[in-house]
Length: 469
Image (tube, rainbow, N blue to C red):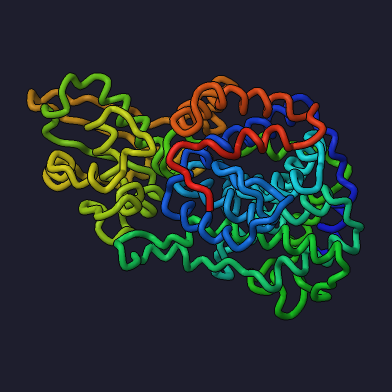
């Protein structure tokens, strides 16, 4: 596995066709929309405080402040807000995760090293190719591991290629990535911390893995060597996963440098700042809400959901009918549906504590809403994690929001205009309309950019409510 990944990183053709170029730019726009819109999240604030220890004269920009830090620190700090609201892309195979976690780290490295836009685009496409192959081929839960382990391997392959590392150096970087750093699935335990939230480390887990990738590549470039058998060794990465020989062979076939890059076109996106398992339910609730003149007339709500959705957002949760914080609210299917029906919209402020504690929300949750698993809505991620919402009014009329794949799913993909609108909605409030348009134009023209400095300057100082470290 080690040599196959190193050879793939070194030799895969980075020429991106029109559709792949578009897909990478879409992933970039989505990443910036999500991250820049969450710069005031407590985890993002904590990450910027950490960055005080890494300020340098020439490095990579902290988004929202313009301060310069080391590439490793920027990979962490700029990646944290990307995961603040569970709002970035998703791919699910045998395992699932968020490939775009690698983008802030690759951008930081490219800015620091003066790498041009076309080379960055190719590296991102390569990283997605590795991530998707590994998500398809590995069952991380077998070893109690979380998805950032895959993103870290993919990011190391992409960063090594961008830096021009040799095949041997890339192998050492991969070994340094996977042996010292193993992201545990414990962050998905659903245990609540002292504030009644899910662990804040969930917001750091992906970017910390990417920081490890940047660190590993720089160490290998400097001559550091990693473990000899980081994947197949007795205590190596694959030993934890109990990978069958047939599955290993299938995975190796995917890492064929002669194959064109295309995996970046196969991820899904989110219209609303909630995990993917809540997107269809929001769509159904908003569809019903448009036909309800006054939510005060709601007498009862019945939510039917894919069994995987029910398990993830109801049965695994401590008390989904009584959320006590933002994260217990946006990880509760009852609360997600209730807020969509009451407000007629879902945005990054929907699940603020003061809003979910309102009396009208509590009345709807505790007295009028039931959720049931529905086998007929099966299909999981491939179908869009389906949910149907049935609302009974005080007249006895039943208004139905039908189950269907949500916007951004592969069965209902975003258009270019959808990505632009997501950028506008999330970035204009913190950076203004003019700068948001300039960011859009810079991403659209990235393949012709000699460096990332102009784009990173736009992402720097001037974000409303964001203080420098």
